[in-house]
Length: 222
Image 1 (cartoon, rainbow, N blue to C red):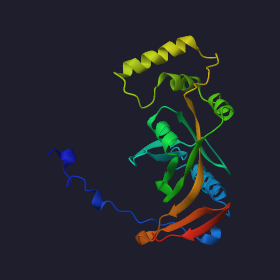
Image 2 (tube, rainbow, N blue to C red):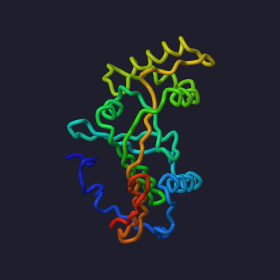
Image 3 (cartoon, helix red, strand yellow):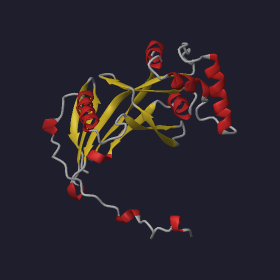
Image 4 (cartoon, rainbow, N blue to C red):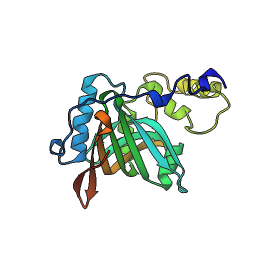
């Protein structure tokens, strides 16, 4: 066994941290989960200690229940839910087409907070997709065409060749068309859990659950 694989060299069981944060009470919560998310999101973004606070783990599952996860950037949120963009032919895109149930996780570890969302994903309209696509840097627009996301490629050189071909076809300053295979998903929340770490693993877990247009708030045992 190499040193890198030797558990004694760096034992994760010995890694412990006591979370010391203010208590998070039910009385502190907003009436709606998206309003509470907005509060926390603004706080962590303003704090400046979290790199890309809009990074979230998106978990999907195939029709036969095989899960998959990846990190994606949140690009919009409002009272309707959380929006991200992707290639519809990617693994997550294909899985969401056949099984729209999805989970989102915002891992804000430096401030001992996380937000966990479960809900249903639906495609956003093409107008909304096009409006966002126009805000992307030119190189990212070309990348959306160059990458057949999740497909097998022979080499990185093949990917770069596709990109260079597109860069020649659509030079900087020329409008890049929106790929028909690329667009947004909106995750409409069914539950939203706000987690805050505390000493001795006595964490706060407060969960919103949607019920006929209203929200029930419950405290969960850590």
